[in-house]
Amino acid sequence: MPPVEDVRLLLAVLAPLAGTGLVMLTGRRPNVREACSLVAAVTLFALTASLVPAIRAGTTLSFTVFRLLPGLSISLRADALSMVFALSASFLWILAVFYSAGYMRGLHEHAQTRFNACFALALFGAIGCAFADNLLTLYLFYEIVSVCTYPLVAHHQDEEGYAGARKYLVYLTTTAKGLVLPAMALIYFLTGSLDFAHDIRPGILPAGLDHWVVTGLYVCCLLGFAKNGVMPFHHWLPSAMVAPTPVSALLHAVAVVKVGVFSTVRVMLYVFGVNAMDACNLGLPTAYFVSITILVASIIALSKDNLKARLAYSTVSQLSYIILGVALLKPAGIAGGLVHIANHAFAKITLFFCAGAIYVATHKKEISEMSGLGRAMPFTFGAFALASLSMIGAPPVGGFISKWYLLLGAADAGAIGIIVVLLASTLLNTAYFIPVVYSAFFGAAPAADAGHVWREAHPAMVVPLTITALISVFIGIYPELFMQFAQAVLP
Image (tube, rainbow, N blue to C red; front, side):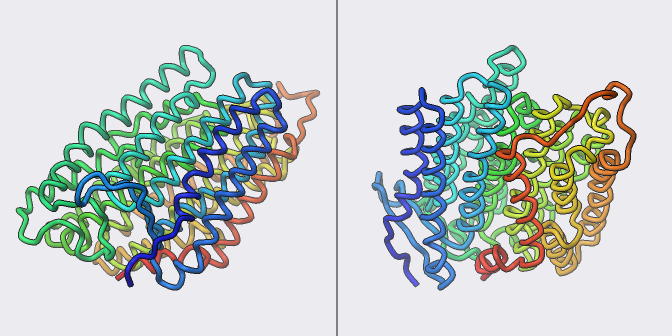
């Protein structure tokens, strides 16, 4: 079925951009400013959700903004893969608006207008990536996300903030320009087009192309989209934790890392294709390569006492599940990897929301200082417990669905080593999440807390984290919500 032109794609991409302008115009009136962010977020989600019936019916929607050369255009596309990312990101932005207002006002943070404007711009870039119809459009929006989130990482405007932001920008722009851009130019030279294929089997590269050329292009794209957190280009991610917690949530759950892993997966499936990856033996080697990231990042997470640092290395590890699943080149593995884009988003934003709520309520950052806090903040730590179960892959939370399909995909591929990696990573996830929850609910409060009466953070923060935690459970019990899109990607 040929793509159907639909202007809603352009309107969806422009919604957060319009929100940015309104935020800047109303910056001196905080309530109006945040209302503009909320209206933009709701508009984006409504437009994205309105595409669901057509995508479920098997229709691919498209919109060409303008053409540069034959086979080279700025154009948009909505298909099943787009919807996994776009639906979760647009919905989570709504909750992030409420949470950010509670966090930023609770700590009396400066430059709140700039913060909200850059937050909206980051969503503009992320939705552009989700709906990109070709490699050029994807690359342009990928770079927009990098540039627009720099002020967010450097928000505190101190030495630590600027250092983290510089590392963030250097890593992401250098890898993209040094690896993805040359690969993109060569792909256009070889094929005369950068448009994504409409089937994940053939890809767009010409048949008979030398395997070493395909492999070189593939490695450039795998490592060049460094927002995917694959080692050794992952150091930017922990360094970016100097940003306020809503930014960390944006980085890890809604936009930045999801843009990286989504771009990687889009190129793997719709530029190279399953057939070429299999013919060049790129699948299992990629799965084993990212397995190193899964295990090493989990081990590093175990050593971190700072809660946000532990969550950062958890993200580095969890992102590689998505790439691993696709790299297995088996239907179950691909479905498990793709649905983890959404499952990880809801669980990880919950964890960062909880970290921020704990900090606003108690000013505690270290896990060793949080003993007994669960009894004073049951909603926050209850949500943290549910999201932790999702990261571990335990039922009935969404992460269980991801890990179950990844194990099925590894079994289909006969990759016993990958099964061992998945089981080992589950044990490591358990080792660095469960002690936090156990200590919070059953540990003795530190002597330094004598006389303190801790309470939950503002409802503007607690309500969003409770909702995201419950949704993680919901998509574990009813996985069809996102699984239908993940399975529609399969040939």
